[in-house]
Image 1 (tube, rainbow, N blue to C red):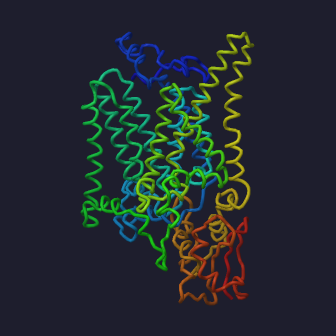
Image 2: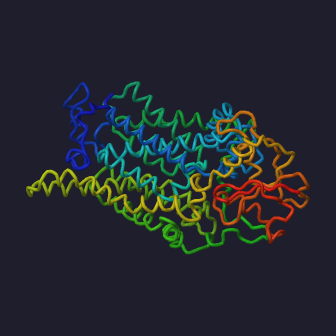
Image 3: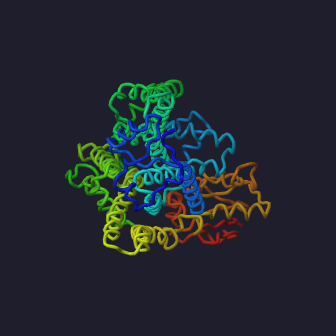
Length: 560
């Protein structure tokens, strides 16, 4: 296959062949000169991936998966819990249609749900795997056009983005859909590089189409980036054939969507009806007021500046905004890879803003104030900045070499520039993950409180008829009554909501509460709010603490 080369031909970040003249690759096809000529005319040509590159991509992915696991969040009791529950009890319509029609994530979750049941690993399986796949794909894209070091820089910029880092293990579809789409880019580039239209090329294009459909069924907004795939696969003489084989797997996913919606929910066009009916202006509060007034009927310019203004005030936000501005400037750089990635970022950003009010302020079709909705911008931004750093470094290295500088200076400069580029984002990301209240969202700072509880109660051979808690914690507690990989419950007790009007723990019952001020489970504290209002002084004196997590963010009481 033409996309794999001997690892001995690897080029460094500052190599002229990689960052300044990517079409200068050795003939790899049977026609020799003809293929070299084609590559010289191909503005997206780059250095083919070697087996060593693929191995590094796997190692990068595994490293990010380990990082995501170590800094895992608690099982999120809202959307991610619903996706797994829908897989365990498919089909299920006890949720919003926009959620239970995301068949890409629900069908994918059925395999771990079948093997492990309602266990932690079922909730973490796809988030962790998606984080690894996305990081490995980002490395390969950076490696193709600007070298291995640039690929690593792009991964570091991506992972250190605090919005990305916070969501690595949380189970929302944003990272999973981006992982699927970025993998589609990698496969599309492999298909583009093939000199002939043969069964391998057909297979690659079919895989691209399958991934696009899967990504859409995971999160619909991934479709905003589809034009990028069209640009990559656009080749003279192949357009009709490529479009045909690209559409076949998309038709398969459409048939899956329509079929499930028709059989399970009685409406074959359910997803179309849900998406076409999305209107933020129609969302009301319990008192009848507009729920998102700051996103409706605003001046159009407000929508285009909303994300950078909000991001600037967040932890790690200034770095995010600066990276975004630099990435936007990439459209002016004379490098095919950088321009493609820059247009990926700008295209998705503009389409997102237009849909969320920039086009019709009276009826926004999406929200800009939910930070995880910005995740689709992060892979492209990171790649553009890494590529621009690589080009700048190569230019300086050439000037130094022509000026007679010592070779050691030119050899050390790429690593120095890489450190300078990632220093601030990585520092801010590390500080965000390990210090302050925000860090209590992660396992290393108390996010594993329910796991601590499980280990403690398992050692005590604990059993009780009822464990009272807020209704969000009650949802996820059964997953923590089993070991990480499932099996029988290691402690017994039926979770009951303490926030209902009729809730009244009696002597012998137990009560489990997250403590105010923790970020471990914000949804749990919100759900506990009605009880907090009725009990402003805290738990009654008849509640005896019998367990407290190491971070003091979770307490189990026994009712005397």
